Amino acid sequence: QVQLVESGGGLVQAGASLRLSCVASGGTFSSYSMGWFRQAPGKEREFVGRISPGYGGGSTYYADSVKGRFTITKDITKKTLYLQMNSLKPEDTAVYYCAAKQWQVFATAAEVNYWGQGTQVTVSS
Image 1 (tube, one colour):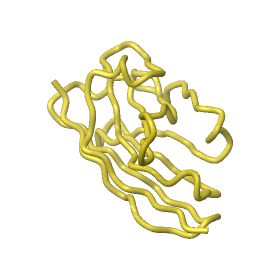
Image 2 (cartoon, helix red, strand yellow):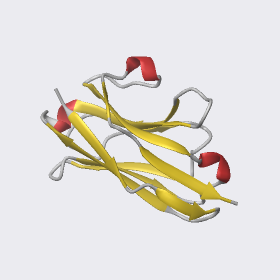
Image 3 (cartoon, one colour):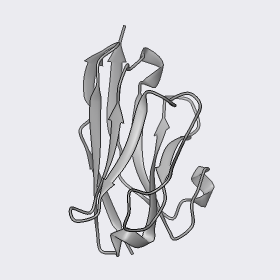
Image 4 (tube, helix red, strand yellow):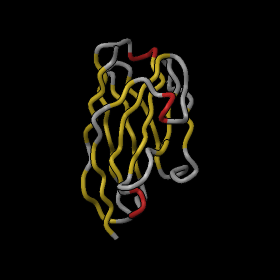
């Protein structure tokens, strides 16, 4: 079983950048497909992107709403997942959650096995 702890959220202005981190513990990090979801007030949890399991850079997949602006990477040695967010927009405001599933990739919240506690990102206009 893996535990996930996010950090790096905050309040930024539109157009700024922010990097979120998710540190994993209690599992074999390389065996997990890792990713990010977000949830705005009154809305369902939304898929942001994911990276495949394995020791290499991993293949990534993103929601259309963030493609070209957000980048997911991972550091196997640090057991850490990153979400680099550039050109932030007010509509990116949400609680961002780290997610994991062993071996299999995911694209919906229902497919995820493990969640972090979330970190708030607020983008002002």
